[in-house]
Image (spheres, rainbow, N blue to C red):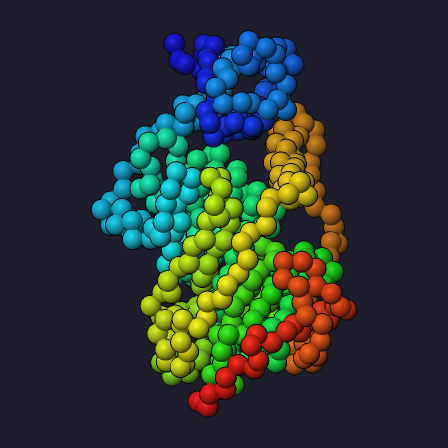
Length: 426
């Protein structure tokens, strides 16, 4: 008799402390749908320490959970699973990426050209290498993403509990991410804020984003010019205050300074002549985020070889780029509300998908049609003129919050970091 045909009992682990009952099933018995969990709870078939429980019951570590027959177990309640066999080359690659690790997290320095997750035609990706970090317990999981050609800090959660903890910090915007980039030309404002809403570009299958003032989602990027090579290129620090797809790449291209090597959004203008590499020069330099054990996790990723060489060729000094940043703010009740709203939004999307499948099934008698005459997304902007920037010396933008002053639709000025960058003739 299969173990799914009998009543089972599980002990709630430490990483599941405080999790809702329905989320526990999503983690450990994903084949048991929400409707079945609700029915089991409503009829008293699910018991926690012998007592009836609702789907929103918060579990505590050490409690005994009684689960009736049905469903398919993803892994044991303790998260045990077998390790996928990897090749020696895959294990070597996985080990070479590790910057630091502890009981809650593994922080990697992702190389350029390696995708975070698999997709069409992608055989090698970070998600496929996570079995290399399985020692005992659950399989580590991704909690955020980097583009395939973007290098740098990538946080991996070791357990379901730490994954939930870190995900809330990312969705609540308390995690601080600092990127370095080389851009073509030099922004006319040394320290500014770019506020341009983004949406998927029609006809690209969601593979490309564009600025869409009408239908786009809010997107904000703080930037600072670290140094410049005459008027040829600039080394900038980027601080995304929202997390839209390709946000940094689209924003820099939209203000007329595409990231060097980003032909997707900058076209041929994104490539510098001479010996500067044609690879993309965007690097997740630093991550500062709260840690479940208390002390903030602060990790800096060394530059990939092509980026370091380009800095040297342009006369930049790498040690001059890093600056002090404040520790992440405490995760407040307001942050919890934001994270909860984000979770609810994602959950509603999942539920809509389930309902759609049921309604489209045999005998449903319903057919879903797309609305005729729907408007495509807004027109992709051309290269804006320099006047789309705010005036130098205007009100400083406030990092991490909504900047003051009137919106310009592109960038606003902030205080210059230590005066104007040094000029160099090239």
